[in-house]
Image (cartoon, rainbow, N blue to C red; front, side, top):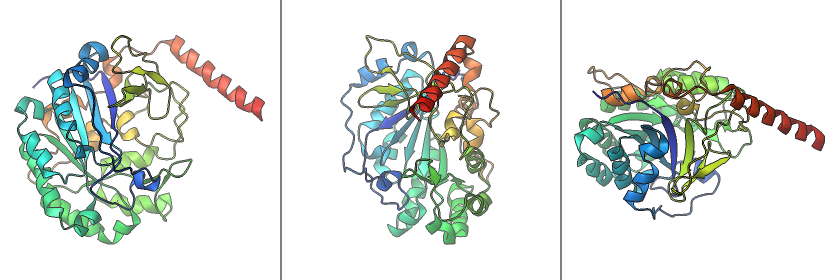
Length: 357
């Protein structure tokens, strides 16, 4: 088994803002962002390979593909995924698991590429049940398991789903070998990014904690907690728009360049003490991978893994080993000068706020 060193985590946004499902808790629907447009990526595979090369990024990266709607609606995505696997990266794809032809395409990938690929199956139980395609979803999950890809199955806990909790657990055990993971539904219409439920957060935790999900356990521990520590997002991880190449430290932060402008290096610089988000709502990735080195967390493998009733696991050995690493173990420590500059920048920002008042 290879022992690749994890150098960076890349959150790769696919600009598709439509979906083949219509879930009531959808973040895009909440903000009326559906535009029925499927992403077409104008860059050649050769250009994309050069933009994501080891030389440009510093080594092997964990790259997550996620769209505003369904990631795999665009026929451009899997050829790009394959190209980045051929570069030596490890790739994750968020999908609703409905498009069988896409998974058939993955089956044709060479085995050495599939073992560095993970599918994060979003389990939209009520919508799949309404459309009578639950068996199709389950078969696609197991198709990828048989192909030796890593998988994880996670459900968005909505109030409408509460009467079906035991039914969901039973279906999961029978079809995936283990109970699905649970995430946290968020209300992106709120400034503080609240959980999306009529129940208090304490009640919400009691209801959904019965799934025994390490993903849910970690997410609930950081939800509503403002991060004030020094964060290395922008240095060890970044966000990029797959079409435009626009690259930022994190979701809502400073630009560090354009990934496709090969005439200029990316200006990696940490968010530091200047994170403006109310809480790190996707910290199950950024924080478990180690963007805040001093924060003790489980590994990313630990919040994604499930051991099945037959003794198998959802993660393949090579993928598990890669996402069991922390970014800080494979990157130079942050210099005290960078921390001092970030602290000064934070102080200046607070001073400006006081003067405006």
